[in-house]
Length: 334
Image (cartoon, rainbow, N blue to C red; front, side, top):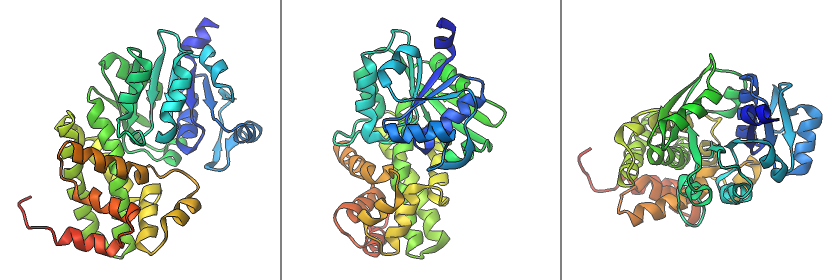
């Protein structure tokens, strides 16, 4: 049993990303436990040995097992990878925290900020987990491609390099190349802000504004991301790496991105509530736009693209008026 606890990894969150990570870990030889909050959904996964809703063509490896009871899971495992949506992050960690052993290692692959507070998820984790070892998995990763075993590079960030390397070892194989970082703030800002910018580029493409506009939004969006990240203590080089420009380009240019699809539908005249209902999954950039806007104001960082996305999402601004507002800003040096 001790050996099982040392080698088993639990993935919390049975959506597309959590399932893809669980499949990856199991293929890498780890005994993997996948937990989800919806008992009926987990029963279907156990019966079908696949997640037909999100990854229908990916069969579960034999060493991937399903769990419904978080308390029992916490007693069985020392290593956890959290992949729940950001709105559920605090509640899941709070339920887990009191049941963890002192030597537990917790990583998360959730991208976003805490709703209502604008806290980075690392701040939430520090509040709930204290000094326990923890780290962040981020970078340009679509769940379907990871689950299919396509080549992928990503970033693992932690306070201590040894912790980042342990988490990276979970994920590493001949198709997945993890890089390590000590810049938790920069990695998390990159993962959160890129979703807001993906909505912006989706809106532009939905309006038919072309490749020039898309490139401009990505480039100026990167400047916004970097300004905010550096104001909060992130390292400039992080935003030129996988967790910054890498994830930004991926999410802004490929229709696998839920946030880009939200923007596309808005640009084509759709209504937000209907778009999100049809999407059937969380688009993190919607809630994150509100939190990033508030955080930027708090630290006096100018983020005009984020501001216009917020106004389209929450104030009813027409998408073409948002673009006009960006183009009519006062001229300045790059």
